[in-house]
Length: 157
Image 1 (tube, one colour):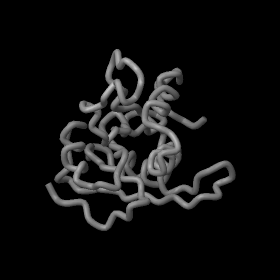
Image 2 (cartoon, helix red, strand yellow):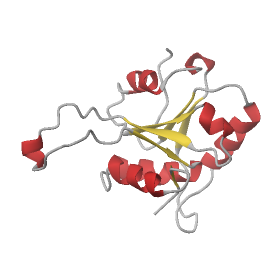
Image 3 (cartoon, rainbow, N blue to C red):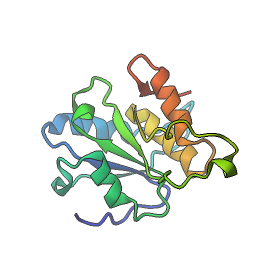
């Protein structure tokens, strides 16, 4: 796989894995480029990986490739579902490896593993990335918001 180069640590990383519909991809990319925030006060910082070498990769394969980036907390995947859904929902994948969580340290009994993925509309990418990057929120909070949506997609709080 080609190495991801040129991503600023503050850029949300979006990896395209479906190449069947160029118009759908262009629509996703255009939405990702839009300013965000309550009144569009924040500029969109996104690094798009648009290389057919990534075509058809499964989520776990994408994770294996991007985990080398220590400044990354989440990666967004533009897959077949993204290209065919009316709201262009990207797959958000948690970069953290949770297998070594110590329940005694966290003071809770972990009945089930934390969520590892959810869908988000392109406008939600910036909110998710920014909040996870500064540890203002955790991945599970966004996954919970997505699961409460009728389409199981994060839109915003």
